[in-house]
Image (cartoon, rainbow, N blue to C red; front, side):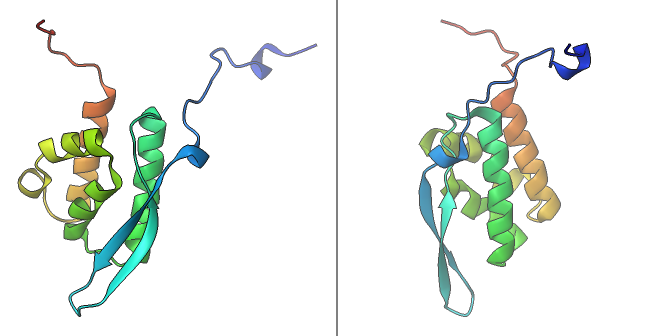
Length: 126
């Protein structure tokens, strides 16, 4: 006999599969004139918040491995976003609206998450 606590009350069906993500080549340039290229996953928006969280975590790991400066994370992050998600990222105006440090990047990501996962509070005119 199955215990009631062994069965989830809400069935979870993920729409996101990391194997389906496209890769891009991210090129990082350094002040000494050298550069590195690395393959990075791209956020399409099709996998919802799960995809976004996965890409953000993946990007943070790559940024750390490549020694990307905190103030440069904003600019490089837009490279891992498809056109639609990139336009929404740029609408936040990260360069002016957020401190250009690790906390500012986290704040900007948090704002990006909330704007792209919360239903709009504004009535649609149409």
